[in-house]
Length: 224
Ligand SMILES: *Cc1c(COP(=O)(O)O)cnc(C)c1O
Image (cartoon, rainbow, N blue to C red; front, side, top):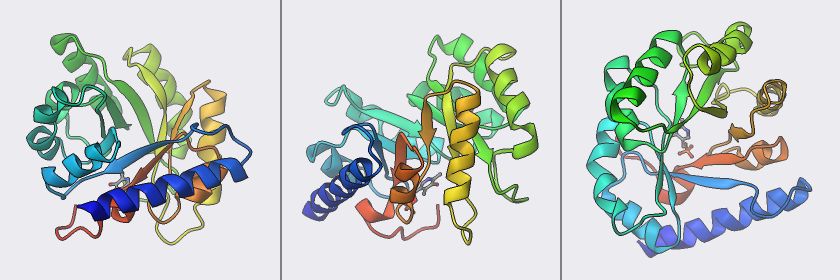
C-alpha cells in the first residue's frame, strides 16, 4: 500500500506542474481518486496519505466502502461518477457528497425527489456526452443548454458544474474546451474532466476536478 502513497505524491506533483504551466493558481485543481473495484484497504491507504476526495461509479460499491470511514475521516468527500439508474437515486443521495452524472429529465426528477425525502442535497454536475456517442451516458450536445437550465430551474437541483468523458480515440482537448465554454455560458464553476491518461490536458483547458484511478491504485482486475 506504500505504492499508493508514492503514486499519489507523483500525481499531485504532476497536477501542480500542469496547474502552474496553465498559469492557474496553486491548489485550484482537486484530485478525485477513483477507487472503483479496489478494496476498502486501498481507500484507507490513500486516506493515510492525505487524500480526502474519492470517486466511485457504482452506488452499491460506494455504500459498502465509504460510510464506515466517515466517522474517522470527517473531511472525506465521495463523488458518484458512474451512470445512475433512477431506482438508485435515493441511495446515491444518501451516500454521495457530489453526484457527477445527472444526464436526463427522469433522473433529475428522481434525484430531486430523493433529496426532498432524505433532507440531503449533494452537489450535482451535469454529464455531457461531448462526443455524441450512442452508447455513452451524458446529455447530447444539442440538448445540453436546455437540460442544464431545466435541471436548475425546473428540478431545482444544486448544479455546480459539468462533467465529461471524451471519446477514447479522439484528441480530448476540443472536448474539454467545449465543456469549459458551456460551463461559462451558464456561470458554472466546476469542471470535472481528465482521467489518468489526459488529466494534464484537462488542466490546461480549465479542469477544476480531475478523476484519476489507474495511475493511483493500479490496474483494475474486474471491469468497472
Ligand atoms: C474509471 C473512471 C475514471 C478513472 O479512469 P482512469 O483511467 O483509471 O484514471 C474517471 N472517470 C470515470 C467516469 C470513470 O468511470
